[in-house]
Image 1 (cartoon, helix red, strand yellow):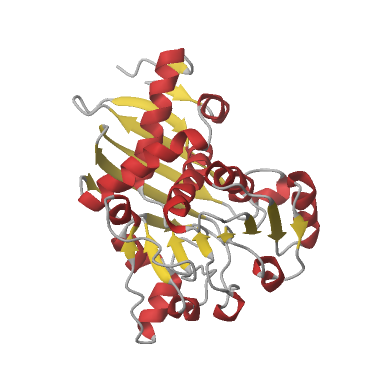
Image 2 (cartoon, rainbow, N blue to C red):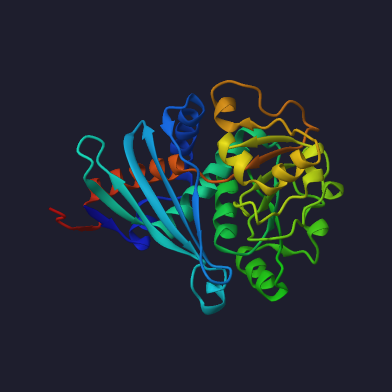
Length: 315
């Protein structure tokens, strides 16, 4: 088994290099050339939790599981809020083939998936980006969106003004005092927070925007007000995950509104994406095991070619 640290993963790939594998993966998801049980969560004391995401991907063939702890207070102590392992198994023998740092894998595969969706949903003329949140996903989403659009302006908002100011300075962005101010002129909006109360409202949106909603991936967390769904077309990675885990969709359905979500893989396979320049679109990312598997396969192939990582004999 080859063990790949976070440093190994970062050296072996970048965000742009994983956009194509994410697109291929989501095409397979919408063809159902996958086995994707829903994420299983274990609640720990306080706000901490552990999630498990296992699955099988048909091409490249293989199965695996990611075990990831979420400790929201870790950043206060200089640590990532995410920590865990991804284990990839051989398709023919079932033997463990690789073990990867799950925190870095998750960070580096989520943003390419957002970029893959934005590439077919955001307006081609998009140049202004709003980032809501200053955590692990914020910086990598800047890189991801720059890979698919000529981003010239970045505005950032965060619940912690000091952290938002530091983030803005580091990334050449403008800090906004409010969510409304951050998104007012944005062409692409990225929400990447662990919010438990929604902060993006329908009256903040304007025609032509695209939203990449990547935070709040369990029903007890929510970034997007349900009323937003009445103003936009909704796309997602995997419908069963959306139905079970997206709080804004659950809330909309409770209010009697069906947002008629569409899997992004069906768009990549030829279905209609953005239908007008004025349309507001949203890609609701819940994160699925198929994306972890696709990213892990791509990274492992590069590691094997460069002989990077530590080999452990498990027999």
